[in-house]
Length: 480
Image (cartoon, rainbow, N blue to C red):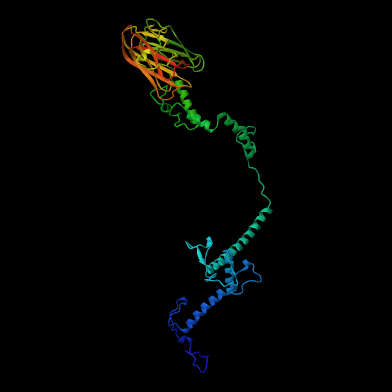
């Protein structure tokens, strides 16, 4: 179609829409072979405008460089200016009178700062680096502008807060429901006054009297009566069952322990008193204060005639009177005990005839029905042929020193031969403060006139000296 308002004599006017592009495809501007010349010119003009905008020096903000009369006037000057700045940052010497070689500085490959590293790439073309730096600087300038606005806003708020009168504070008060030291019940008191009086005048004294938390927890843990222990009042039933409404398991608080203490006290009050059996039908007991009992008994007859039980009348002066029973004494019984004698150290050898070479223990008789024990020689002479139960118990101690090795042997032996009836020992392989030795022989046949004694043989590493609190016991009972 020819333009109606176009006259270009002597040429024949022709519309650009009617002329096509016969050149190759140009992908960079999306131009294809066969497009009209109108499309070609439009696309070229668009690209040109974009380039002109990019090259327009007024499109770049250089205020951060504080350039007054020396600002770049062309895009080329801007690039050269940024190149010079980058070279200064990279310490690259620049001679403006000497043209760069090998394409530098515009085409130089330089190492970039950490904030410009992309993945593993740590270098950039100098020109691209300069452009990236400019963009980064502009972004910083924009952030600084926003921060300036925010700081100004905060400054206004701080000023308002400083100019505002501080709020008044009134200490809370409340009415006391009970008297706290000098603060009477029903009075209205400030909370800080109540706290001060309570801590200084009440709580500190309370902790001083009761102990701290650790002390109270230790006291709770020291409860020695277990819920599985059997009742004294009812020996077939455990404490937790006998006093199910009172006993607390587990005891984790002081109130729990107090409950269990009351249960133990009640159990003691309901229980019976155990007394040693004596050869008498009646035992008179008098309580002389507190739980201590003093027992007095009639003289033991030489030819006893006893019942199966002995009645015990216990009077506490006030309150109830208790009647108790004790096992009857079987004829032929003997019990002796006292603190052990010194037991010197003995070195084992072929001449040592075991326990018969030990030290004879001279014990004090507690009771001896047949007067068969001689405390001067420590010998018990069998009064009648029959079956006997023999028992001994020895407790030795070496305070601060201890037994380290060897052994201590104790036993009931013959005083006239090398025979022994019951022997036991304590063996040491490390420092031990105590040696406890017990032995029992049940239903042993003894003939009249047989002589028995309790011996201790020290084969340890230290000599034993008599120590207060130690004991040796020797008992014989005829059973048939």
